[in-house]
Image 1 (cartoon, rainbow, N blue to C red):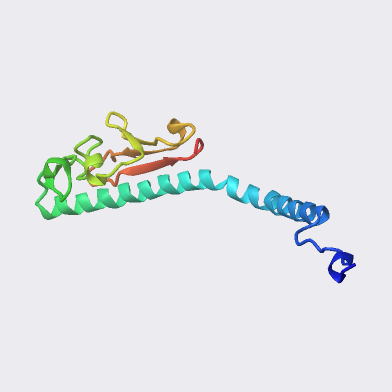
Image 2: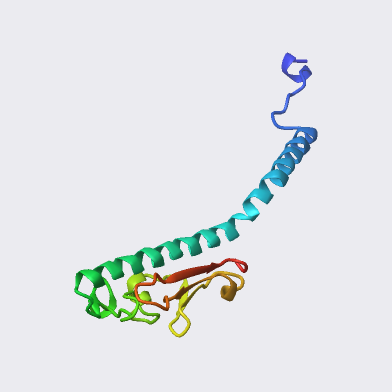
Length: 155
């Protein structure tokens, strides 16, 4: 007999025990990592709402500054606004709760729905859009700063 025929062949690869061990380790890692990632979607929606709130507040402040700089004349010209104009409330000096008011100031509302009668910006991707929103409301006295109220209970 030849020497080659007497030797046992050694196969390359993993044993069943090694494969099961790796699968168990991956399962344990996934069990710890999954809860961390499961809450990220809701946190992303809340961050989106908070970002819109900041845009509303800064846009209203910018429109108010332009209104004052233009000797309190409405509508004011803002770059990028539809028809180039934003309607300002004569009492407060801030953008109105209308399509050509605060919505024109914010301009890009991709992913949001705006209700011009209530001043509510709702996040379309939220499980409950009515409970994941920002409400813009004018002040009641001259020069009163408008409010942007955030609701994130349904995000």
